[in-house]
Image (cartoon, rainbow, N blue to C red):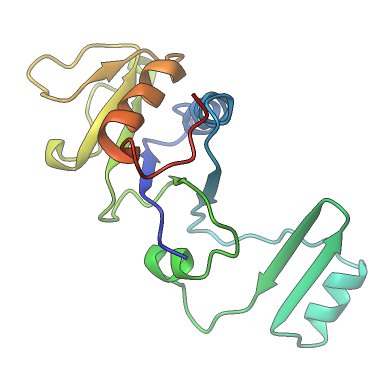
Length: 173
């Protein structure tokens, strides 16, 4: 399985990254793409609930806990240290056309920055790392495409032109 293209959606806290991702995922799915997402949480997370069987397995010391149902599988693996994005990508269990990440603002993947005037007027990302901006304000002099916060179709067009390419996806015409 080849590693799919990756684009990181970045921005300051509470600027609307998740909302934009929801719209972009839906638009890419509507166009026939297989999409994976990876959310980076530098504070850590726990998706298991105390007392549940899988939580009890992990508490007993299991290094990998898998829960399977007829329509989904979830895996929780202990790691001795944080895995890099590339290490996570190498372990993806499903073949997809594109991976969208939320976070990884310091990473080396192309980025779409979400910027909202109410959250500040400075960009977080150096221009040479930006694929585009999703914003409710204009950044004159910034030489990357700028889209409205709700323009998932425009951003999907950008991804098709710049990241997905005509031969690297299973797009349904």
